[in-house]
Length: 169
Image (tube, rainbow, N blue to C red):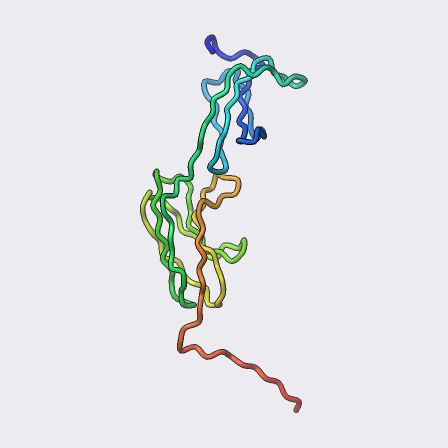
């Protein structure tokens, strides 16, 4: 826009549906940074003459498309209780703050740092059979989960179910 920011100029970021979720004053700054929570369409808007009682006038809009960095993510579909499960991933860039997580519902049971664009990690499998999730997630996103795979945990073949019976004495 030329000349530099004036006292009441600001930049906002909006999601594809037009909802503003961040903004920053521009005065005395050469750049501003925002974190986006997920893949999608976003708009940066530059406003002049904004203020506490005025929205200002939008004089420039920059549209941006954010894509999911996960090219592939997989893990074993079935694992034996008490063993380990391997997850592998391929990302389009070197990750910053990514983790691979084994979870039951919203509870984290195991977590491994993802420090390379292509790699894998082993995690201990819970001793209880059931349906679990293995997720690849970022730390700076709203929903956090970039990709997810279901893991079914089964008892070992030689494991006998425990039966408890009570009788009056």
